Image (tube, rainbow, N blue to C red):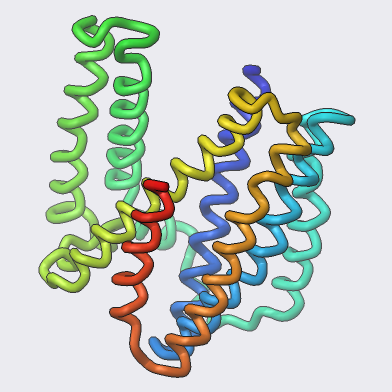
Length: 255
């Protein structure tokens, strides 16, 4: 279990960085209208990954070893690395190593990491590993909350290139988009996490069977990704999409 947790943490950090870099690259290369099309086409990749991943992972876990869920990333990422090296042509300002290191918002990054770790550990330990009124849980939650203030201070006063420019929150449209994205991610990740747990723990499905049962949701998500990207590209309108999406997600999750 310790090895599984450690390797999953490493994979999660790397995978999370890769996903963000793909979105940043698309946003840099294309204007607002074309951007929706290419972000929507990521749904095609998600259709392949979201459909094949649970099946392959379930088969590995059931018939071989869970370690293959990690090893399978190497050839896929290796091919992607070679293609990027040969085909991606980006402007390189040749920033020096020292200048590049100093440009990173280190204090903001570390304080945000502290917020995440302290609060999550406190909420995870509370009522399970330790009582809610235990000093360990109280300290984790209190100091995690205090680190939010340090993070905001860093972004406002210390960072030359802040990790989260606070000026973004002056625009009500931005704030609305952030709120919808926050709620959407909380619900969708929760459902994707608990459905396999429900299938295997409650329905007693084997890992491979669990991968089959989650296919309808994954395939629907991918199809809607692609369709929405094409629609926004053709119509030039996007406000109706989160309206309809929030209603459907609420109904679907409730049902």
